[in-house]
Image 1 (cartoon, one colour):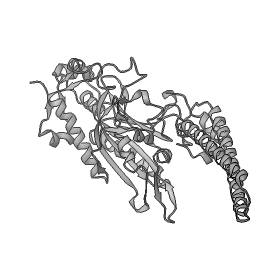
Image 2: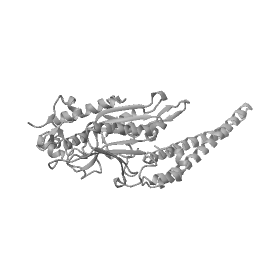
Image 3: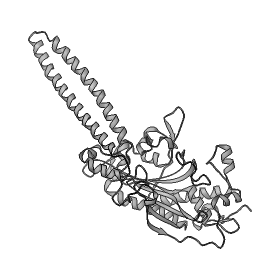
Image 4: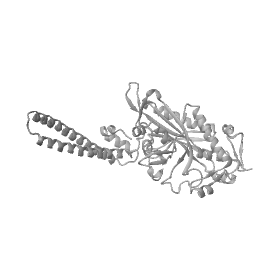
Length: 424
């Protein structure tokens, strides 16, 4: 959510920034017109209230003098009804304003490339060299099915398409990945949270999923509850509607959760394999920091996710997303893309976003600064990492010619000493 004052005070600057998001700038004019109406109604109501006060004094004087005040009293009642009606109209105008503001994305940071899609993204760093195989590497689907440990048919039978049953040592490997990632984040100052996997509409609105992305969510029938698309939603909302001390900052949460997404609008994309499922596992990082610290906190969160990939010895690159490709709530977003030899390409494994005060305004997350003045916090979020996609990366990068998979050294203690994943 944007600060209405910033838009009203400099609409042209806001339009200029909104163009970077390829939004219709006429939406700014709508906001300005509604604000003009709002101010006019406020002025009108204040004028009518002043008239009521004046008439009330006259009524008091008339009664004191023993004179009839019915005419004035009738007029006061009429004016109060007009004030009440104006108040309802004012509420409608303010609701319209909030509805428009709630669908406007965050403004891109100055260094974000301007572009409509991923073709304008900028590679800013890379780590590791893609492994050269002496054989043609298989993709994770062929590997998993040949091992008998990725069962897409069972997932489709139990539920439907884009679900999978993960079996045996591959199931254990994904659990090992989750435990390793959580432990590593805890060693670096994060607090582990086990949040609800179902949240209410206020939580979805606070983090930015509603109202714009309603079709991407799974809603529980007959309830104002939703399955979480990411742990970012409950983690951000832990401090919703709170005003807390500056001393609590920075707040650093991490959580493993399953995530649920309808994948609306992605028909025909990544229908094969683990890349785009309706249900998947993820370790999420969320930061709540003072406004002046969010740029440094964003860089630190990127480094945190990078550290996981480096310990797993998986080649990756950092990509600064363009204005048209980054998420709704982000002002700046870095994607980490891991090398997948079975697909002969890099694929996203983490998105780390700085949302500045965008979510905090929606969720009313505030702290008192050193002068005791309430300030909106800045929020950050990122995958640290998506467990299913990390499993894909390990399967494809650590595969052997005979179809077995070597376990990365960092995970051996989590695997009970199992070094090779095979069906023998």
